[in-house]
Length: 132
Image (cartoon, rainbow, N blue to C red; front, side, top):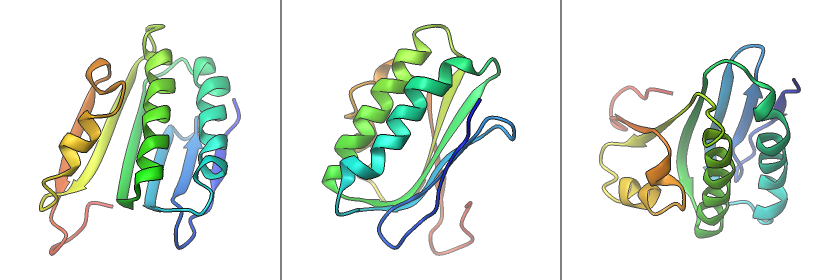
């Protein structure tokens, strides 16, 4: 199984999908100039590598900010994960969000596959210690 590591930039998140360490994380800000180019490796990894994993996969999304284009790509990410989940893959999604951001849960719920995937929302206090 191959891992996917993409370093964080000012406007794109860090991607760490490492089956050996059981880390599946998207973390940071997401407003890249070319959103499709940024998310293409993520979509390809999910499509080509996720099926090879025989243990529980916990995707952790820790996005401070994402623009509209990134949200649309995230919907595609959820759709790919849903395809794997429908084949009886043991998948959980944890979405970390600022407890003061009242818009995040409806936004995530608007993603194509939300109602078909187990999503756990985990709040953190931006003013206090962050959970990530």
